[in-house]
Length: 66
Image (cartoon, rainbow, N blue to C red; front, side, top):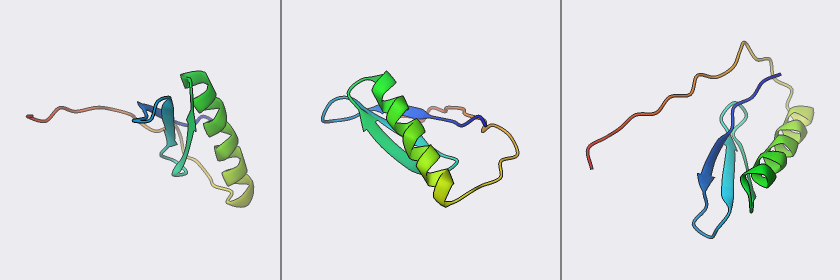
């Protein structure tokens, strides 16, 4: 199954990783570590709460006036 990950720099350093399909989050010092930790968190979540997916999420971005 294909899942979405959103990486954001963490204020304390490293990265926060978020998966919108399951609502799980994780952290890591590098993007690779954050993604690996998120992958593990999603796998554990799905073991406990199986879900059916109809396809990959569509990820976009938008701007607002500052």
